[in-house]
Amino acid sequence: MENFLFGMSVGDPLVQRRVLVFDPQPLFRDLVVCSLKHADFDAYGAGTPEEAWRGISQHDPDAVLLELNINSCESGVEFAEAMLELSPGIGLVFLTGVRHPKIIDPERGDLPRGAAFLHKSSLSGTEEIVSALDGVLRGRADVPRHDREYAAGWEHLSSQQIDVLRLIAEGHSNKEIAALRGTQVRSVEALIGRTFDQLEIHFPGGDGNRRVLAARHFLLACSPQMERPLAHTA
Image (cartoon, rainbow, N blue to C red; front, side):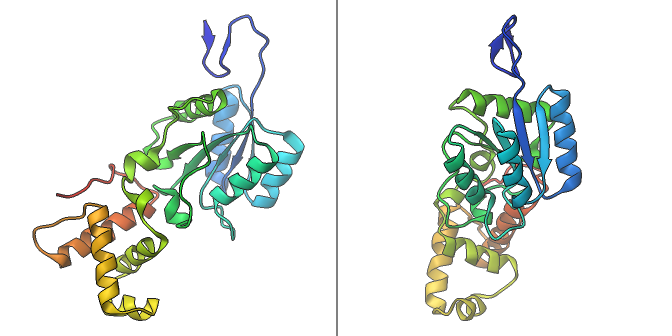
């Protein structure tokens, strides 16, 4: 019989997997570390990039669970890429409160190859985190990617489009957005139109209602609360 946590057969020597949990929120971090220890992982936490680098150097983890928003000048994706240069075989699970990496780092195209992406508010229990860790440590191709499930279309947006969505969500008019971005109103209107079409934001009541839906779309993508997946409105 196969051991779920470690990918071995019963009777094989037990090799405890070491996991770094990098999250700036101390309560959440400590709860995850405690849960992983109960699941027989050798887990420890870090709250800052400096602590995380120190932990990687001292403990040489097999996998890292990390938040995208690490309260630093770099994003969690940038940190992970730097970490992979040092330890190419490390497993990555992004455990985050945002629905898509581009919310935090609009210039990024995708996550590092083989990484899993879990949205905190979509989880029903620790077993989903354990399963994701198991998947990345085994090198499976079907690791969970909540960014693709719950924020479809975001991967195709440019940094300019994401910035415009943010400004719409803040309540700015097209004229105000043009002034803030140093461009023409006509250019802003065209950019907004392309963005709405890419995200399939349609509403029979006209552009005013589409702006409300666009603002909701952005705010839900940024929110740590996920009541239900983002759905296109036809």
